[in-house]
Amino acid sequence: MAPVTTAETAPPAAASAPAAGWATGPLRAVQEADREIARQTALRARAVAAFAATRPASADRRPGQPGAMSAERRAARPDVLADVSEWAAQELVVALSLSARAAEQLLTRSLTLARRLPRTLDALERGELHEGHLWPMLERVAPIADGKERAAVEAELLRWMAGRVTTPAQLGAKARRLGLARDARDEAARLAASLRERGVSVRADRREGMAVLDALLTVPEAQALLDALGRYADALDDPDDDRTRGQSMADCLLDLVLRPEESGLPAVQAQLTVVAGVRSLLGGDAAGEIGGEPVPAEVVRALARALGLLPESDDEAEHSSAPEDLSADLDEEPPGTWPDAWRAADERWWAEVEARALRGEWGGEDDPPDDELERWWSLDADRATSPPAGPPAAAAVDEPTTALVAPGWERAHDALAAAGDVLRDLDRAVGRARRTVSDARRADQDDEDTWQQSPAGRVTAAATDLDALRAAAGPHREALATLLDASGGGTLVDRPRIAVVDELSGALLALTDSRELRRRAAGGLGLGPPGPSGGYRPGAALDRFVRARDRRCRFPGCRRRVPLGGELDHDRSWPDGPTSAGNLTGYCTGHHRGKHQAPGWRHALAADGTLTVTTPTGMVTSTAPPPY
Image: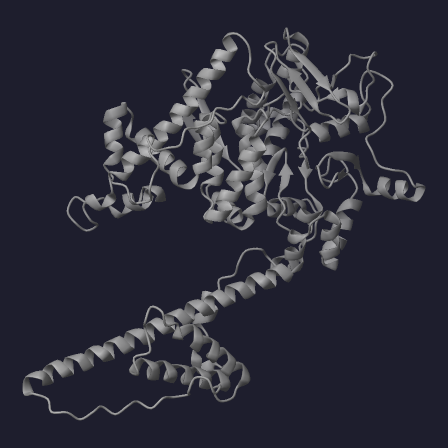
């Protein structure tokens, strides 16, 4: 089992201040208690992992023995528990008064942190994280198979959290974005597996007489369903209706599904906000966004194709980022179908292997004849000539020296000869296996090189959007131009918009369309936020820009959406402050109320959209509009 640092041997964690600073009074005591809870949680995880190391699976009954763990149960266990006794969790049940499921979850989580997320465990012990932050790391980062890639994503997330107020939901969204950007192929495979789990289920709720209807859908489906139900509820417009909007949405769902002929509800169009960069639309791996949720680039392209915004592309399918299965090709091309030069080189290669084995030059730890022969075989196949002068094509085997052998030794001599034959056969098989692995590696690298040279590969590797446009194939650029020129109507509620962003910071500079781009380019005008509105309510263009810039409530740690029909907040009250992008902020309903009603809180909005919030106890934190 992997070595585990115990609570006793772990280095002391250096204390660090909270991201927003220390509060005063009782709230500081809460902060200190929370950091101590985090430290103890880390120490508990280390101790549980150390305990697991004392309970190896080798002490359990082996598969096939009476009373051993069933094959189904063994296959269902998390990989991190493969070398841990199945009875270890039972000890935790007794020691901690936990259910069996909770005990196994604690065991799995502790081992995952200790073995796969050591930096996260250190940050938890220093109080930089709390227990809620562990779930995004465990769910999004720990499953990354490549150890170096996993460590890089973990380190980047921890750096991103440093010095800012970060809720688990925000950390989860950032982890999803990093995973989609850096582990796109594995994410695509996990998405394909998740699609097979789509469905609807019911579970009991803690409130008496209530149940929760769960629908596992893709992000576009779920966002469209939620938006449509909201629009149906808003269309009721009954002044005597005292139901909340959520209650009306639930009733609309029931009417539409159970009583469609009786509902009498007018048809509505669902509206989705899709954020897709140039590289996403051109076939690259850059993640997109639907309704504020990060999604793989292929999901964005599939939605765009379904809406008729992007055409079906054979070129994209040809250069798919998913690696091909090359094993069938390798198996379907036996040596008999090789070119004559390759087959001759292969025969000479094996003759040389056998000759060296007979001379005793094969198999030593410090002797790498297989690599040398492999290079020689490759050169020989390429040149289609006789082997180079270096290694001989076939070495003569020395004749055995005639000697008098006592009758009792003849059987021993025969046994040694037979053993030699077995070893030669084994060496030949090992050499053939090594060559097969080497061929597979070369084929995989060739496939990767081919993909990187494809339009999708070049777009993914592009440093900027302009580089991506240069790297894109002609059909991709034409499809992008068609999308930008698409007009409203049909199934589209609004005209597709172009988000002009700062390439370095990701900040939204302007929200426009292809016509506006051409008009400004012809007139030499620059792009920027819409100008101020004369009244209290922002004009349509300004309202659209601010909502696109903020996307979610700007209060620190909040992930709620800015209500579609709600008012944007003036930082400086109108008419003292203008109705402009620099004086408007998007809040959810609750934090909008709190901004005006919570005593002792101060909100300050900078011209670039940075919001600084000061609490009554003196803690200060800032949020910036989320980058594109």
